[in-house]
Picture 1 (cartoon, helix red, strand yellow):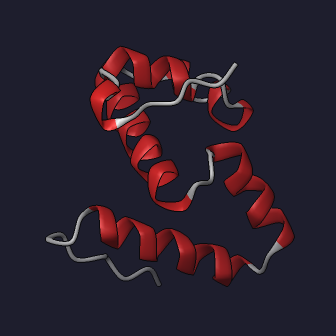
Picture 2: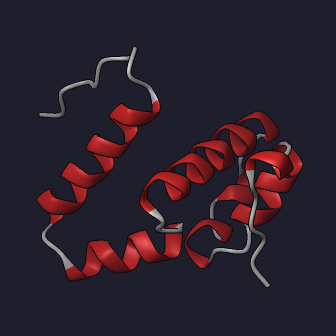
Length: 92
């Protein structure tokens, strides 16, 4: 059963970690990280999901079905929206 959060029901750090762990693409890697990293990553995944309506597993499926550059462009565009005051680093 998937948890849906609304502005009135915004999740705390532990709720976000638990939600992130329900996704297969995240569950393998998240438990091996520090608690602060888990919270930061879970929060970022939550914001990304709210903006794109794609959960982490759906993003992986999107990446498999689309060109790598299209997926990279999607991720870059959405992360710019999440942190407009922080310039994107150029990847070479």
